[in-house]
Length: 165
Image 1: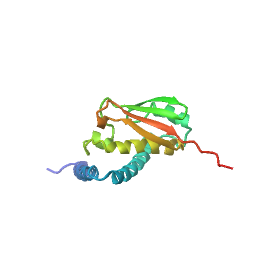
Image 2: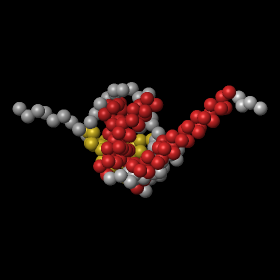
Image 3: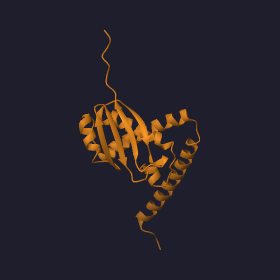
Image 4: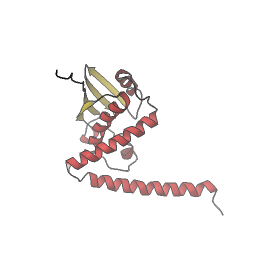
């Protein structure tokens, strides 16, 4: 008995996706073994790619004001974000309930490793730059990969210094 036309295509797509997932998982296991400088460079590149995909997926308007961006982030994205702002310092808490929201982790493509949190910090940094056209410094306070319930970052908005004259 012949299979319906769509069924063969789905089987090939599943096989291809499984193959790609195994390759990605192996790549990240190798990345986790690399020295800190190399991991930092790789995770920054991964974060840039992820932010681009995230913006496309969520349909965020680009660019938007910093205030509009912060308001929008509390209602869109893979997890709820709680923000506390004191001038140029923002405490960004992603409410994860003890689970990493990286799609590669949630789909069991890669293992959760504290080095992956480097990507998370760069993700926040590049998200601010991409959506709100705002340069920031990001400090990781706590993450799920380090045993916390949530991921928390301290973000400091960079302000242009007036030229010395």
